Length: 257
Length: 263
Ligand SMILES: Nc1ncnc2c1ncn2[C@@H]1O[C@H](COP(=O)(O)OP(=O)(O)O)[C@@H](O)[C@H]1O
Ligand SMILES: [Mg+2]
Image (tube, rainbow over all chains, first blue to last red):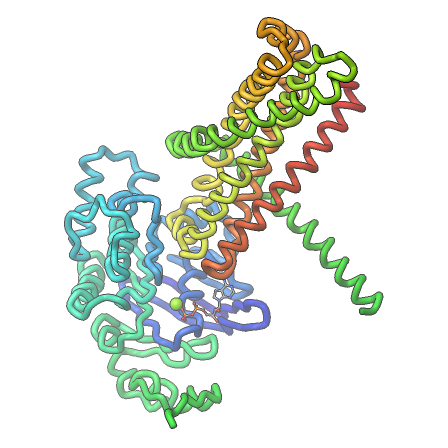
């Protein structure tokens, strides 16, 4: 269970999170949608403590995390896995070492067990025999999947996905979406999925929250969001260039003359 | 420009400097803390030591060799006039071990290794690898800074000892081949002139230089902003600041040894 109340974060003079409220129930998959630069990654990083918010409250499984020490936070972090937008693989390590990171750092396991768990995690994201490659030899989509395997290997209760299927081909993307659903159904993993792919959003979400001007303007089941009358949400989910969002930003996309 | 804005500018300059020194001090404390807290990063420390030591040996030896020759030649110009060639080995040995070998080795390592540290940690910062470390409950200071810090304060004194020896050998070449001082005489004069304290004061300095290179390099890397261009800028800044800190620290040490210990 993640409860976020009145969360604020300003970078310089730019307010990114502005009195944001959001609740993710245990075992629920929450999809976050919103335009690029609206602060979705900042929100995920605030939950895992990479960015400390200016004010407001975040409770992870009942623990208020906004003011705890880094050491205390590390205990909370052992239950949270984050798939970074760019993968964030350690590029001095092989794929296998990346996936085994948490096992190597925190658990006293023998080589065979580690190798098996690494192979299992990689298999879950549809990769096989890539343990000895270096991250620089992988495509963007493969990096993302290795990054997900690295998170699965630590068996977290909560997974934060930052655009897990961007840069991934449609077939693999669908497999990843199925995996997200399976993790919820079989292991009761709580997830926040940031995505721009509305079909994926309808598919994996228990609920969808739309992010606009630093707070959540709509939060509901996929059906409620699909049939919403909120003009801003409608423009976003239908992907229209004309509408209240672009008018609000005085954006006039160029026309070829 | 008005006086007021000039004042504001110098004010913010001083503020930035104090803030920077504070950040370095904080990084230093955190590094010391993580050195003594298990689990130890033995393997990663050895990996860094291997990268720093053998990699820098050739270039620092080369420089020390030529500097040894240069000192002997410069001194020859002066000493031959005074018929005091016999003291050239003393000058070579003392100036190398106390001053030149430690400082030159530190500057070379700052350029080679310090820049590399900033570039490596900096690119990890901009590609969110440092964030990922923290997300996996791993302190970047423990994981990235400590091994480099220990690697530098181990390898820099070692490199300096080799530089001392090779520089003295450079002086030997000139003295024996050009000034017809006998090999035995050269070695004799070197050994006589060198007190253990000359070597030790030189090596103590290198430990501080190692700390400077590690802290400045890691700090720049961890605070990079703005993509590949930012990494490039941070690398330059890292080398420049290390150079300045090394020279200033050296001056402070030399002054201290001179006035306080009369050496
Ligand atoms: N560490 C940071 N320092 C300053 N500004 C930041 C930082 N992280 C994010 N921002 C700003 O916050 C805004 C939201 O960024 P982000 O959360 O990455 O957007 P997105 O919703 O596309 O993931 C952007 O305008 C970005 O420039
Ligand atoms: Mg983002």
